[in-house]
Every structure is written in C-alpha cells, then in structure tokens.
Length: 639
Image (cartoon, rainbow, N blue to C red; front, side, top):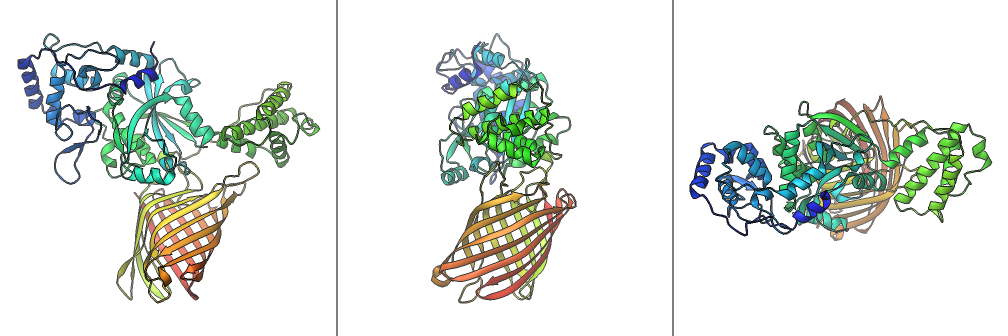
C-alpha cells in the first residue's frame, strides 16, 4: 500500500493542464455545457466552493482565491465561474495518461468531476472514464472514517501562531482513542523557512508567501505543540457522513499541488481550512463570515455553532500543563525532592524518599522523570547526562511495588469556542485634568488581560488594530490613540518554570510637548521582566524593565527616548467576575525631549455576561512636571 505522504508529495509535481487531447464528442460536450447553463450550475454554492470563488469587494462578480497556475482551466476562469465550468467539461476529454508527472483533469479535479457527474449524469460511452489509480490508492491508505478539527492554543513566541492554529485530522477506521496519534493531519501554512519574526509578519501581512496544504502524522504536530511550545490542544470530532468526508478528501486531493497567497489576518490557516471543510455540505457557509479576517478561535466557534456538527470534544493538555497539575497535587517537601532529583542534585535512592508513603514516593519519581524529559524536549541542558539520569530514576521506580493511579487532569470549564468574541467596541465617559470627555473605542481583535480569561491563554494579551476617539467638552473630537499592535506575555515563574515575560506596543498616541499641545506621536514601547502567580491562580503579578521611544516634530528635538520600570497585579474576585489591576509605571526620558513620567492607577472590570462588561479606571499621572488625574467608566461589548 502506498504511503499517503509519498502520494501527496508526488502530486505536488503534477500539472493539471492536459498534455494530450482525446477525440472530443463536440455534440455531447455542447449538450453538457448547455445543460449546465440551463441548470445554472455555475451559480450553485457547490461549484463556487470547489473553485474557491468569493464575491469581489469593490465590483460585481467573483474572484478565485487559488493563485497557482493550472487550477483554473479557462483563461478567465479565476473571475468567471461559467467559463471555468465550460473549460472543465472540455478538459474531461483530455487524453493525458496518468504517470508520475501528470494527471488527467478527470483525476486531478476529481471532486469537480464527481459533482458534475452527479448533476449531469455523464454518458460513459460518450465521455472517457478514468481509473484514477493514484487517488484511489491514496484514499485507501488513509482508510478514513471521520474528520476532527484541531485547535492549538495561542503561542506568543511565534508570529504565525499568536492567535492559535487549526488543522484537520483524518480519523482512520481502525483507530480508537488510544491510537488517534497515528492518524494523519491536514495542515495549511505559509511555505517559508523565515526565522525572523519581523520579516515573517511583514511578508505575511502583504501576501509575501505561498500558502499550501500538506499532510503529516498527527503525533508530529502534537509533539510540536505539546512538548516544544507548551500549547494545549482541543479536538472537535465532527459528525459527518461517509459521503461528506469523501467530498472533503477529494477536494484535498485537488488542492494538493496548488497554493494560495498567504495573508496573516484573512487568507490564513483558519480561513482556508474552513474553505476545505465547507465542501462537505452545500449548506455550509463558513468562509463568508470571515472575509475581512479569520481568527482561529472564531472559526472554531463557527463550526461549533452548527447544530449537531460537533459530536465530541477532547482536551489534550500540553506537557507543561500536565506538570503544573502534578506539582499542584504535591506539598512543598515533595516539590523540593522533584526539583533536586530532576536536576541530579539528589539521588533517586536518597533516604528522604524512602520516608515518604509508597504512593507518594512513586509520584515524586514519576514527576521527576516527566520534568526531566520536558526540559530535554525544550532544549534545556541542566544535567551532564540527562539520559542516564532518566534511566536511574526509572530503575528506582521499577523497584517500587505499586501502580500509580492516573493523574486526573483538570479540563477547563470553558472551551476556546466558548470564550468572549474577539472584536470589541467600548463606549464611555470620564474626566481628565478637569476636562470632561466622551470616548469611543474599537478593537479589531483579540484579547487583553482585563478581559475574561475563560477560553483564552492566561497571561497572554494580543491586540491588533485598536483605536480611540475622544471628545472633550472644551474643544473638538480628536483621535486619542491608534495602536496597530499591542502584545503582552506574562508567564508565571516558579521553581520549575522560568519563562521570561515581555511586552511590545507600537502605534500613535497623544503625548505632551514641551512647547505646548498634545500631538499624536508615533510611540514604540517594550519591556522584559518576570511574572508570578499565587497558588490559587487568582492573582498574577509582574515587574518589568521598560523602554520607550516617541517621535513627533512638536517634541523637543523631534523625539524622546526613555527607560523605566512597571509593576502591577491582575487580581480576580468573585469567581473572576470582578478583576482589578493596580499598577505603577515610571519612565525617565533621557534623550530628545527630557522628562520623568509617572502613572499610578487602578483598572477594574466587572463582567455582565460573556460578551459584555463594565470598566472603571482611575489614575494619577505626571508628565512634564505637571500632575493630573483621570477617571473613566465604559461599557464594553464584544462581537
């Protein structure tokens, strides 16, 4: 049996354009084309989805999203669904024989052929029949029985995965819940080896990469997400019929050698995976609601809201999440033993272990092995010979006559698709420096640390394209700030986990100029430090060293460069309904416009529902040796 990966690699080399032409039954072809026009097949959603047509944003008509040559057979097939249907029917008469380099259009576009055959009832005597052996071998190797949508949580250290990532798992008939890792996963990603995050972000914003589908073993992605990147995984098993699964796989075969221009916010992994999945049923309209942007968690929400589509949800915690659970079940002495043993500072046969009850002794040894293996997986070299240390711990554990009970992993009460919606509008009013104001804010996406954590990664703030308009009673309305990007990562530190916390924000905001006025300056802020959580995870505190740069011609010398620090705590009360954030920020601008700024404040959020909240913020600020107070209240609506 041919390996699915090998077969998919082969089809990347294929050309869908016919290289030879069989005798065309002109009369029958004209009959089919006429019949298709009468039935208006080119206007049917099934055809539009198979060709990835979307309505043009500025003019009437359609635009095909596939950008590789050969997918659209008609010269104007990328913009004319009818012309493409006519050319496809003509292409089915191609005499191209299947080889390692070529495919007949009947096989290269097998989903199109299957659907058109079902509508037009092809006469096999007048239209050539092809075996499509390579496709049949590939489908047989997959042995598919179902599909599962996979969501991996956000990973802030990778620009391509800041919002999370989705992929599709092909579940085989002979697999069960214990062997699902052996299934194949369908992934869409940008084809690039770029390691520079800024370069990737820029090219991703402007379609600088080709995005393509690929298949790989599911266990490889789980290892990447769970072991290396510490990302929890959610599996949404879909309730689809065998025919619906077959339609998705036939279209995947068609897309194998094709590519799309990759765009970070809209034509990304989440969007094109929905485009693949929606061919399963004519009534699925997944991509239409994400034409302006596709966030993975929002696309999962679109799937989960279809009645009966999600049959079951499975939570697969990351290795770090499992370790956190294990540590939380231990007392301080047991955690000290794990730390010392895993770092080879204490022998696995030390007397202190034998003093523990047998079950706790086993738990300490097993957790020590898990933590040591975790450190090895993420590339941390803490001991001279980690492999030898693991074998010593295993040897000691094997002599304990006890079977440790499975660890009960806490499943989050709120799944990623059940969290607050990612866009937000804010309407409020307040008073600043004895001036009343009214303010409207809009955030395109996605989550900040004052929002409810449920369904999101704790400590991860990712905001793109937010803007605030403010009207003061004493003068006209003005743009208060425009922030294209604002990222904050607070990773709690303890004896076992030492990830740094960091932040970066860039955009325009109002600042005081030494000569008077508050111009809208270009501002770049960043910081690095640490974060700490209490045992109940109800408080997340941080301390950071910060840097800031401001640029505007109205500033003294046109710029200001500074260094400073910030600290604060996010504290949850009343089961996270009420969150408070006391903070202190200080900055010394030592170059350009010199100044010492200070901000002492308290932010508060009260959740009214999943998608509605109240904010009340107060602050005492100093800028250019002048103090002023700010207080504001606002209603937040997520949509």
